[in-house]
Image (tube, rainbow, N blue to C red; front, side):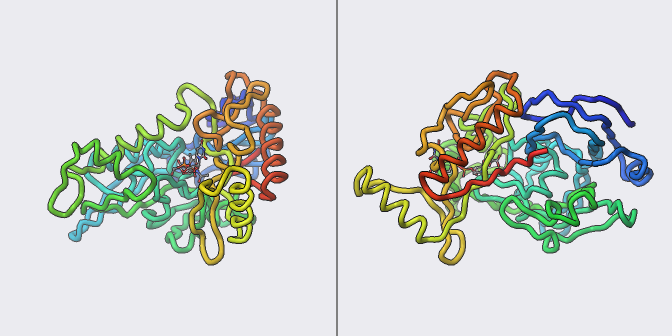
Length: 351
Ligand code: EPU
């Protein structure tokens, strides 16, 4: 169960090792671990899809191998699915879609595991996983008990939860997540071109309810997967951690002055993409800011800015060093700050 000097799995494909690596495959085995005896620091990972290891890890990496999936249906068409933290999130999306359940289909093809999805509140195509989480089961390593957090006590925000915050982080290990899904047709198609892509995939005809004919969660999942494959690097081919930066939220006045400057530069028709983000606040896509600063496709050592989606930094050569990514990150942050006065913050955790 305890291995020494193991290469740490990470989707960026950084060649880094952990002094100690512990994997457990059940809650019973987790509860028996003597945490005091494991070299510190301790860090729990999923499949390392949102992490940048900046060097070897001198401590203990833990990983859940809990891979159970259980389902409970009630009479109203609401179905609760409880998945172990070690289930590959996309496998769960495929499994629930195949059961005809709505809720996870827009989150298809996101790398990572179920436990990390609930910590990070992953999101895509207008859905955040918090929208369908009903509770998160954790092991409290301090009190040595299992605790169930209802979703409304998880402090969910954009790519955020209490499990990422000081005092909680490191204390609770997610062992399972319960999702509330539905057998009723409940598509969420209002993000970007998703609706038109789904309509095309359905052959263009509509049912009486106005929804595309033949709509199933599996079909939406297939369309989302194809969109992601067209825009994002394929994890099996290119190392990356998905979006490297968060989309910044700024005051309306900051957006107004950026728009004014862009229109002075490029003409009155020029636009700055943005989405409402609460009173007097707007979210500007980091991809747009980075592209405006000329980074798209830029290669730095073994790393690069992905040419189809500049929010993603990639292990371009396959042999990128952590320092290649770190240097690229800080050059991008500096240039976006000096051109737009906006401080980008990474979505990816650095270790
Ligand atoms: N854009 C550009 N240039 C580009 C690409 C995008 O200017 O080359 C601008 C466009 O205005 C576009 C906008 O950015 O409309 C948004 O692009 P996109 O729809 O690709 O989404 P995003 O905001 O860049 C977020 C998530 C992704 C998720 C997509 C789709 C974050 C940090 N990222 O990206 O999540 O797949 O929406 O829902 O919120 C991830 O977290 O790893 C991830 C890939």
